[in-house]
Image (tube, rainbow, N blue to C red; front, side):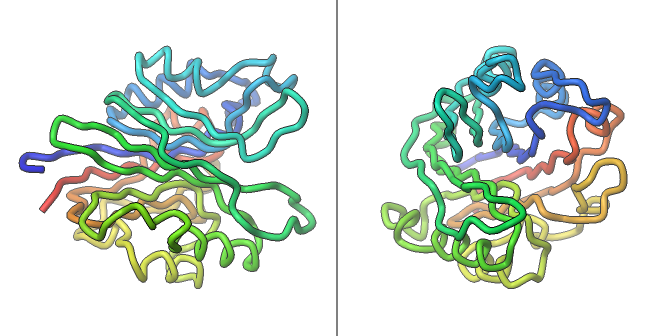
Length: 247
């Protein structure tokens, strides 16, 4: 993968409802376009839900960008779906999607899922997993262990370029985070940090819960949280971006 360069982004879009309480898929697409990533993992998207006027949010955003996408519903009720998506300016093929384990505990009884795609970049194929994990320690541990297991890694070699990104609902140094970093590297670990890494909530960012991890020959040349006037209002999370290259 000589000359490889890829900008990836993870972004919890809160159903495309911003801090002004206005739902706008177009605004989320504007955020993505302004930041210039090649691949984006989005969390908390609706498809066919009454609260979002029945819109297929991932499709609307992808079409505005002129990109390809895959959506995976972590939760379904009749014709209403809620979940995560990966969008890419390059050709994209869905390789795996499914629900992650974890007890449905009060106060947030919410299924969690993940999807893995293969993206054909000008320098070769890259695998990307996008996920949105649970809120409780017991859930988180079960989910990161599953993602680290053969259930998701069996078809990948140690050299295959792999990116794992999303809203992990855990901080750096926590036990779930340490389990992930047993086999993958946080992109913040590759060198000088570029500004604060807290992504949530946008009105007073106290928590670094959104992460990008890499495996194989990938390394990060820059990682940063995109704090702009637009990102401050578009969602309750700031986007996290990592610029990647290959050894």
